[in-house]
Image (cartoon, rainbow over all chains, first blue to last red; front, side, top):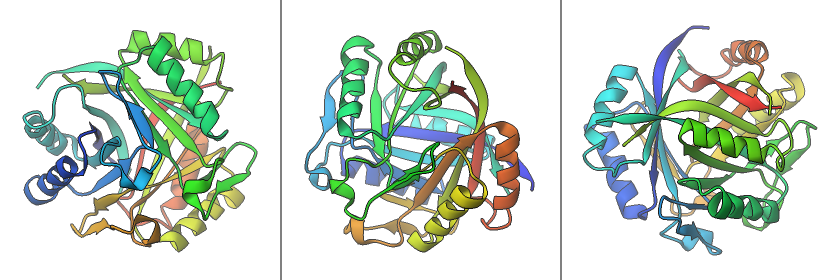
Length: 101
Length: 101
Length: 101
């Protein structure tokens, strides 16, 4: 087994599906990161303390969404630099990890 | 782009929605962490090997739930200290990360 | 509060439920890791850029699945070594974390 260093990135969105699709499109078409997975939370709250939740889960447009990807550290740093211009501060978390290759 | 160090925390629950809502309320009202996201797993098993799964996903009260938050390391350490009294051992994982600010 | 070092592992699958259930069974019956949680993404794309998504979320067999577990570093390393033979390269990410015990 061999592995390389990667940066894991998680972007926290709460602004509904349109914003998410725009971000995914950018990561896919422009940034060309190697892979992206989007998770939807079942509830959550943000900095302003407003709870985003739903009893009709699949209908809601206001549930938390997390866009996750990983890439080589230098590539991830470039992407983070670009995202900084479109994602508001306090919504992107990143850390170092190992990827099996 | 500037970033600060944060501690990522993930709390693994399997005891149904009531327990989760109590924890969220505490993190929101008492601990006042900056943000929380809750994810529901589609299946899983815990230390005792019992599989928590469901074909009627949205109906189940026994699916894995993960409560995730991040905050400044000193703040997160305080919260972890408090959670230690209400969450059983072996269910809270944490690590250092960077938050874009 | 005391804590021990663990390795967090996330395995990214897109090949449908059958593959996932086989992996879970192995982690449960053979590897006997202490706990596993499986998350389903709502959309995503992989190395080949093909977008895996669905409007009929609960029906889809082709949505991203993430299988997550953590265990002591030496135990996790053994499991990673075995998984290397059944999971294609570039789909397993791992990093060090602390577990409250």
